[in-house]
Image (tube, rainbow, N blue to C red; front, top):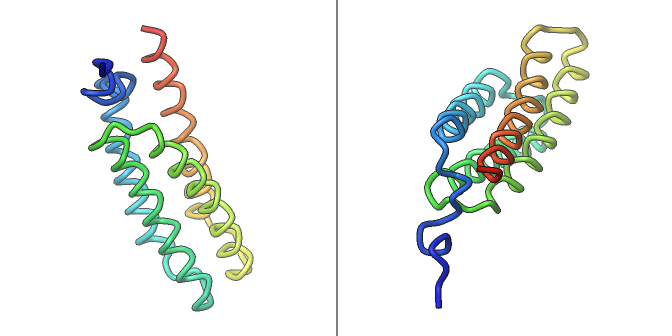
Length: 123
């Protein structure tokens, strides 16, 4: 016998604020990719594109399939994106508000989503 949550997806992903936050996160990932590309070398550029694809894929899994696996993919890809931004910063040889904003965004967006998921779980 199937559980209702299995048929409808994970109910924790049904919150209005969470869905809005996830769509904002998709936009932030795409905008961040456009603004930071290219990273530097061909290998780093390829890795960066793959990481951003993973971020958006994880978010879309959460939004469209209501799959919690998407959060894990997104969170790991976001951590990798922070590392890639640090590489970009190092290769650029100077500081930029864009680098700081990208790192903060890649940390804050998944953290806020986690808090929203926890709140939705408690209700």
